[in-house]
Image (cartoon, rainbow, N blue to C red; front, side):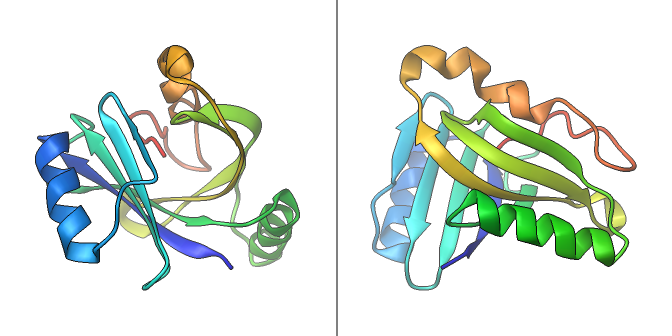
Amino acid sequence: MSRVQLALNVSNLGEAIDFYSRFFDASPAKVRPGYANFAIDDPPLKLVLIEGGGEPGSINHLGVEALSSAEVAEAKRRLGVAGLASDDLERTTCCYAVQDKFWVQGPDTSRWEHYTVLEDVSDEVSDERDQCCVGTTATQPVAGACC
């Protein structure tokens, strides 16, 4: 089952984790320096918290987390047929995980990613977290976005 991803910029990661843990009655799936995510079943949501990534309380980016690379490829094909250009990243390290993904530029500069996690990576690779965040979509750089 795919789930919608909402990545939020937060000013204090600890406070945000505490609030969203209580709000969704869930524990984070992953917590790293300046980063946390929740894999929420009900409603199906991947909530990502990015400390210092932008204006606190604003949306960093949006996305869809898929279960497999085949689902990501099918979504890319479908969106290509619909005339939406994508910026593709295969086996990229991003936010403490190796992922297959692509980015699409939405209206009003919204950025959407469609991705699957292939494997988690350790804290030692944390410097690589922003590699996926530097690139371009069809119309604008995606620097500063992070999954």
